[in-house]
Image (cartoon, rainbow, N blue to C red; front, side, top):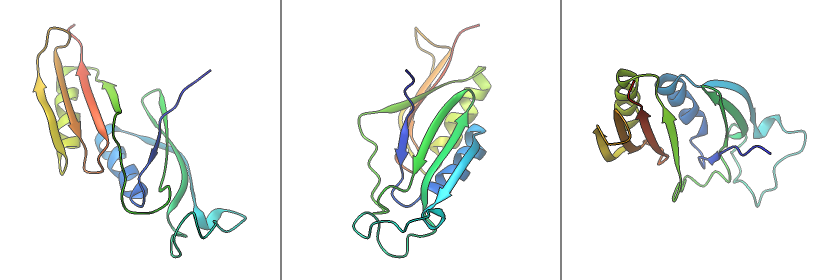
Length: 138
């Protein structure tokens, strides 16, 4: 059994994928737009004009696979009650990722040293996805 996060950006998926490529080194494995589907989307599922929105994407951050889409394309993504945790290779990488994710987002806990980590911080990025960035003592 394998569990993978699936993020619904409700209209900003392509922008989010570009952002994660720059900030976290994400690699896009596949991306399908609604227009790529052999059958048109149900009009009750996505609004007209959503053909260029992302129906399904899969990307990697390190060895982790994350899936994403624009969902119902409502423009109202809701990421509540869950965070994605990234273990950085070192303190400087943790600081860089945290700072870049925080641009346009909201710092939930400033990057700091804790009893369990050399560096740890929590941030919601500009799309509303919550991240925990951690580097462990060497």
